[in-house]
Image 1 (tube, each protein chain N blue to C red):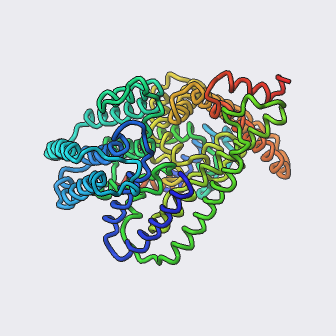
Image 2 (cartoon, rainbow over the protein chains, first blue to last red; image 1 turned 120 degrees about the vertical axis):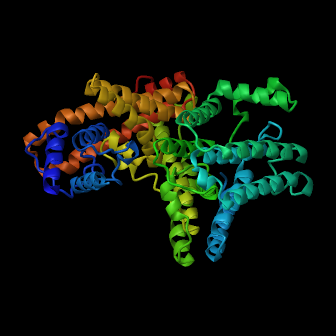
Image 3 (cartoon, each protein chain N blue to C red; image 1 turned 90 degrees about the horizontal axis):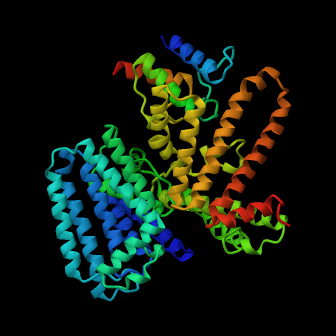
Amino acid sequence: MTDNLISTLEDFITTEFLKQPDRELKPDQALISSGLINSLSLVDLALFVEDTYGVQIDDTELNAETFDTLAELASLIKSRNQE
Amino acid sequence: MTIHDVIVLIGLSLFLGWVTRKGQRKNLLLLGSSLVFYWLQPSLPLRYLSFWLPTATFFLVILSWVCTSSYQQRWERETIQTAGFMTLIILMVGLTRYLGLGNLFATLYPPRLLRVVVFLLVTLGVIAILLRKETFSNAALWGLFSFFLLLFVILKTPYFAQMASRMWRYVVDQAPGLARAEDIKWLGFSYLTFRILHTIRDRIKGRLSESSLKEYLIYTLFFPAISAGPIDRIGHFLRELPEDQRSFEKDIIQGGRRLVIGLFKKFVVADTLSMIALGPENVSQIQSTGGAWILLYAFTLQIFFDFSGYTDMAIGLARFMNISLPENFNKPYRRQNLTQFWNNWHMTLTKWIRSYFFYPLTRALRSKGTFSVFGVLLITQISTMMLIGLWHGVSLGFVIWGLWHGIGLLVQNRWSTFFKSRLSKLELPSKLDPWLGGVGTFLTFHYVALGWVWFVTPHLSQGWEVMMWLLGVVS
């Protein structure tokens, strides 16, 4: 389940934001603090997560402290789905 | 803030750091912060206002807490005790008019005690009425939010500030014709507003951490962060408040180290640079392009050392009291692009603006899907940066500075998006990375430096003149 989640998120980020569909992202690779995805992409990522998984991410949570890697985002989605 | 003020604050922080480990932590932090608010309030030419502004600050903070707290929390015994405690502080400071403590609060000169008592009765009455209200609607909370914004705009707009000064002069029987925009200097209001607005908005969204009145007051008034931030979030600050067993010696060493760095940055480096830094008074003395660049470089470094020095001092003083404040600067001038610069300059302000303005606006525009990526970026980047500019003051110079950075961010975003995939296909050797990074840092530093021209010169014509000198157009 987590692997699928990470893989879907990875595809979305590499295709939509990085424009490099073949690029591989490690689950623990920093996305926000490293500047890999910018603030506009972060909003698009939140909208994608909300539409796809029905999980709400508040604007105050769009920062590296809440999630910075694919693994952290996947874990956030899972924990919110269980609530 | 003078070195004298800082020395007093160091003494107070060390004393509070030591004594609060023995108990009464929250009461003593609140007492210390409240008294510092009165003590640091600048002396004003407007009669009694130096006393009323900190007093009004306390009232506004209590009002915000009442509107954002839960009904159950409001009626806890501690709330009444804290309200009584604040009333006592206001009365005691009011009494300094009669007690011959003029030197302690030399700038205040409180009004007659009867007026203070009447104010307290009225405000306590208002608060008592509001306390009975079970819950506040979102409309009421947005109303409070707008009220703070309005107050902010009045204080930051020279025309309105002058009008407010004139009105106050009518009230206290002073010559209205002498009113100036600079008459009203409200200690800590900018940062206080950001903290309060954050709590109101989070309350509306149902995301606000529960706090007692005492904790809310300490959060908003915490004295090391009054005048130059950083802007902490209430949830993080509350986690720092409880007493723990951390040793005072350790905090003295850590806080002291940070404090010495801050003192050196502010009072040695920044104050020395200020002698040759670009400013409205030396624009007319520029006689060469090289000279103009020296002034600009000096200002560029001065503003960083000054501001980050204050942050270091705030973090150091807070550390003495076993409180960890968030970082505000992280080597901003060494960043390779403008986005990274803004991720590392005045970080707590940019994070605030991003959370409460940029992201909601971007989300709204992206959800509708009617705007292109470029259109969204154009609107959001420019309005966000202009808002940051206006936060410093409502003037054309700050608007242009905001516009300068908004356009810079937009161009940099589109540039990097366009080249990201293309560059990756080229597979450039990795030994080129430091060189490309160096070019990025050089360009970013100079773009930011040129932006300061608009920030520092109050008149457009002066800014333009400096730009011409810098670009070698005037000779």
